[in-house]
Every structure is written in C-alpha cells, then in structure tokens.
Length: 324
Image (cartoon, rainbow, N blue to C red):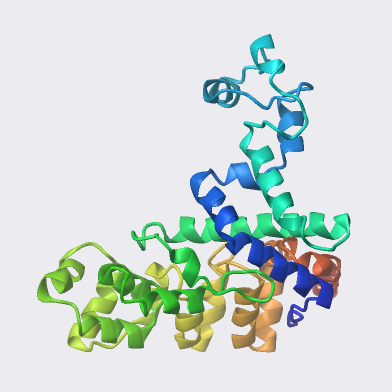
C-alpha cells in the first residue's frame, strides 16, 4: 500500500501563494519577529472567550502570569475596562493587533470574506511551520538572522528542509561553523567535504575534540576518509533521513522505522519517501505495526481531506489480518 500523492486544487494553490506572500511581507515579518508565536496563531476571540465574558484586551503581563501559572480567574478593573472601545482604535492584546494588521494587508484583495478567512488560517499554518523549523534547528545554528530569506517552500506551504539547508550552507555570510554542523546533521557528504577543506586548524579541532556526535562522525570521515557506518549515523542524525535511510541494508530499514513509536518522519512528504524505499511486504508490515503515527500525518493541512480514506484503508488491513 502506498500513500496517494498530495495534490492541491487551483484555489488552494492560489490561496497558499497569497498566504506565503503576506507572511513574507516586511510589516507582517516584523510583527512575527517582535512578538511571541502565541500572539499570532490564536484568534483574539478564543483568547477573550478563555479569559472571561469581558473583552480582556488590556491584561497586564503580571495578570497573564497569574492566570496561567497560579490559575487565578482574571478580572478587569474599571481603570482598564473603559479604555476598550471595540472600535479598532486601541487594542493592546497582541492577537488582536495581529489580526487587524493581517486584515489590512488582505483588504486590497478582491476576494470574498470566506477566502480571506482561509488565507488568515493558512498564514497561521506558515507561522507554525517556520516556528517548528527554528525550534528544531536552534541547537544546530546560532546565526538565525535573515534565515527566513533562505526558506524554500513546497506547494503545500511546508518548508522544504533539504533545499532550505542547501541554501543556508551555500551562503558565505553565515558562520562557517554553523554551515558545517548543518551539513553534518543533514548528511550532505559533498558539502561536508567542501566546507571541511576551508576550515582552519582551530575550527577543525573544535569538531574533532568536542562532544558533537554526528558532527564528529562526519569530521572524522572528512579528515581520514573512513568508511561511514550508516547504522551509527541513524542514532545521531536528526535531519538526514532522506540521505541515510536508502543507505541502510534492506533488512534494517523496516526495523529502523518501527523502532520509533511516534514515527521518525516529520510530515507526509517524508513518510511517502520512506514508503517508496520499502517493498510492498514491508509497506504492509509498517501499516500494520505503526497505524497511529502514520494516520497522524493526515491531521495536517492539506492531507486532512484524505484522513477518512486513510482510516478506511487501515481498517481493511486490520480486518484482513484478523482473518489470515
């Protein structure tokens, strides 16, 4: 059993493209950089509903701290209540500011409101995608300034991690230490070798003497030309799945995938890639043994539309297994 390819309708492609354009706009980008992710992904209506019947627009940081950590039911004093007019002129709730800003950027589009709402939702998904990328890479790269400009996006607004990493690695303005770490984490052999050739002795010693695990493995390979132990690399590489997985012995591939209870793949595309390397019997086996991590990828947009079909396929596999 193979997963179906992910296709977007023309409308979805159009709305996704607009969402990405708005995300990359300088004003929206500035807001996302200067505010916490939670100010951008939760609607102001949800926040206000959570905090109580009154429109709690002007909660102080201390009050928010008390609410979340001390479980105190927030209330607004008259001092603050009268300042909220509900006319869009003054809002100190960042989520409301974010929505006003984004709606202003969408107001120039001749689109029905229902499509504008979809674009807002897609911008939030793009924000979450970029946030996850930065969280995943915060120990691998220190110089995060202007990394947004290197992001390479798939048609369904996922960051293409391999292409993005290649773009970062090939940018000479980024610290060479970070570039070598990224090349090692993603198992880009040709980039590891080329960057190693321009590192000075002090920089090379950092990787050979420190406790870098995957980076040390690649540093030793670049220096000594030692044969790579791909099974060892699987234990340390966080992002090199598409490079090391085909290198494993065939009998080890299925065993490796099933050793991760929550799945080693990060999204639908990586799961598709893993399945494409397996034969049909191995595919059936992993569907039987790991149904929930596989079904989990259908919860993400736009694969949600295939969730019901995926569930039915798993049920069919389970029924066949019961009668065999």
